[in-house]
Length: 135
Image (cartoon, rainbow, N blue to C red; front, side, top):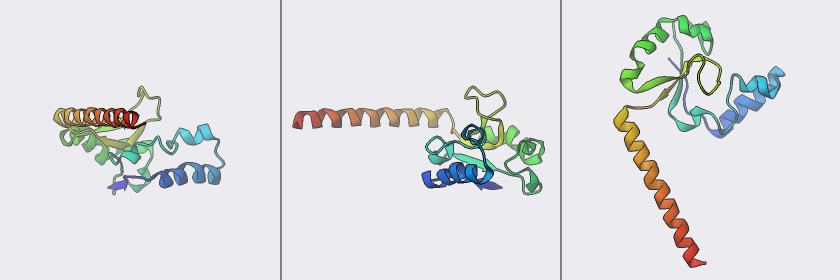
């Protein structure tokens, strides 16, 4: 079942700062389990936290890896363009989150995304060049 998808900056501010205060956590402790505002994959709309409705006690916990839902995701998510965002020992140094998945698409989707990003960067450069001419 979907637990959490897109989050606004305000949503992430609450999850980070308000829960940090309520739980009496130091910033580094909170950052181990929740990204600071502006740094969450959930801001992109490509991330989703998934749970197993048959095992609600595993929601947002490492024990989710022991569920049938996680097993299915491990075997099939790639077929639908998803990957585990933060596997064990990930290069980002983020805590292992078996419930946190992101949409990456297929190789064609990635190529299209990179081309669109390049075109947008070119457009921004051209706009800057034009504004320099006006000054």
